[in-house]
Image (cartoon, rainbow, N blue to C red; front, top):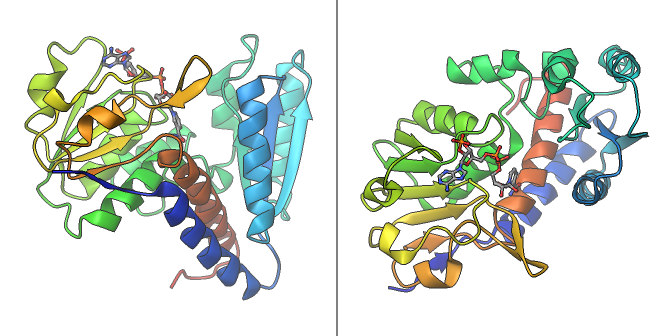
Length: 284
Ligand code: NDP
């Protein structure tokens, strides 16, 4: 078997075109506010990409680039101002924050109705309790979209997720459970992860370990989603050994060009949804 590629770049272009067309029908453009504290290079690149993508679909994007030494209260004041600014529909605070800032406190300060990253515990709790009001974090939402693009019925599928972080593994587990999958979450203390993955219909790697997942870990025809973004000698790679699993998997996502572009597309979709909710418009 030679795996088919799930092309996240292509899918994200289609999603963004649909968002752009939906935005032309609105009275005004939705607005996303992006806050970056400090000069982390990867974060700067991510935020520039988010700005560019927002502009491409006709959204307003306000970028707040604060100094590394910004005081916590200053950041909280900015978030509070944006929470109360009716022009702003979505707010994201780029992680990781500098060490002197309390990440939990900052994420809790973003109003749940504008929390398009879904990192506020209110949205995390809503997702866990299968409340449709939840903003689902962009990466898990992107993964779900990719799975649905190749599998019309996720019900009863055995899914193994590698990684249990608050931004990927945990929300993904809740989301897939809400779609009637049978979900196993593995992590750095799990013994013999391949004993779990090799029986799975769907394997999702989100652990930040370059090329860890090999073909021996994968059942014939399984869907393999690679969330990981790593660099080896400056070259990007995922948590899955892409070339190796090609001969076994049914579908696989590449890195780059897989989950990454989907994450940005879903962030825009969440911002569009936030606009609709804040303006009392029912989504069709
Ligand atoms: P974290 O470092 O927050 O979490 C990593 C998780 O993987 C932890 O739960 C950890 O276990 C687990 N883990 C680490 N090593 C192993 C191992 N050897 N075996 C099994 N599990 C292991 O990372 P994130 O969740 O933030 O990100 C994961 C990856 O996804 C990274 O490469 C990141 O760059 C990428 N990413 C990509 C995005 C995209 O848009 N494509 C978005 C977000 C992240 P434990 O809990 O026990 O420590």
